[in-house]
Amino acid sequence: MGASLAALGLAPRAAAQASDAGRPIVFSNFKLFDGKSKALQGGLRLLVDGGRIKTIATNDVSPPDGAEVIDCGGRTLMPGLIDAHWHTIFAGLPISALLAADVGYVLLAASAEARRTLMRGFTTVRDLGGPSFALKQAIDEGLAVGPRIYPSGAMITASGGHGDLRPLTDIPRMAGGPPSAVERSGGASIADGADEVRLRSREQLMQGASQIKLTGSGGVSSPRTTLDMVTYSEPELRAAVETAADRQTYVAVHAYPPAAIQRAVAAGAQCIEHGHLMDEATARILAESNVWLSTQPFLSEEDTGALSGQSRQSALRVFAGTDRVYALAKEYKIKTAFGSDLLFSAGLAARQGVMLTHLSRWYDNADILRMATATNGELLALSGPRNPYPGKLGVVEEGALADLLVVDGDPLEDIGLMANPETSLLVIMKDGKLYKDARPT
Image (cartoon, rainbow, N blue to C red):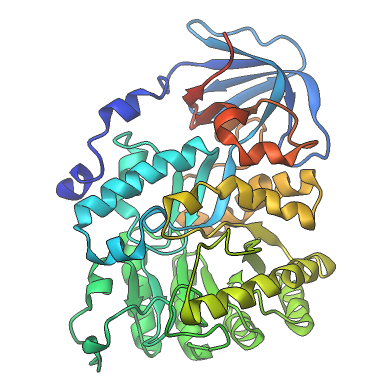
């Protein structure tokens, strides 16, 4: 464990950029978006102490001894953003490097990308597959800088399913045989049959997974799969659901076509990832079953990078399905989370805020910001006692965790501000610590 932490970045300088967590901070002269309301509220002062929002008051909040006062200059104060579908380890490096590079290099690159993620205003991410446990620990302990991470650990996939990137020389696979290279890396875990799914789910939970991720259909980044494939049976899916429920948490299932989505719901999954091939009957089932939809507004190759072969054909189907999945989600009032799912490129990862602005095709700005804050916070709470950060996220209210942004402008009027975090985000706070304060002096 010590070697893993040391490999993550040796980052005392980065950690020193955050303010002292024990120092109270008072925010004044701001307009508040609390994560839920349709309009900004003025005339407030806010006290942060001990990593939480202690007081929000219309009267004067007298700063405690030693407190720092941040005058927001009439700008917008809002919760930190939450990305409900992120891959902490896989976001910033090409897949060729991830498969071939030394693990130390991969972790150092992931640590650097984690810092950039936080600087984009995303103070929390739900990691939907990858060996992020050590990086999460390093961030939580102040050895590296980055967002809160809700880890899934290795995505669990069937042989030949999405995430099975083994070379063909590794087949045939013998049940109970040695793990492949991709499994040893912690990126994916191959499980065939209910007993193996149960075993692999328990392994991720043992390492600290806050939820379990299964791949129930093919995917874009697995070139030997197609989106319409259904890769897990209902008993296999149910084995993971039961295992997670025993630990009082939940399963998220990667699923594009109706058959895969409906099978996951029938097995008891509480969250569907993607869903871009959804039809009306499936949308109705999600709504009636009170199952979450965590989807992404992919519009073009600007959001995925240039792809080829089967991956490009799958991506084109996703682009074609994006408008329909959001239209159905709105029509049937499905609980919908925002995620970006940007992979294998630091350039693409930098578009995290741009992906959020894509939602303006279907939602007004207040609904967009609510989805990326309070709504996503509700999804994170599904992990129950497996929640690594007990407390409310995505809202500005007394007692909530102190993850806050100061925006130079009004994002309820101009959601495009979120696409330019370098200039638009003047203050970034996570857990009561200041990681950026670029207010004009």
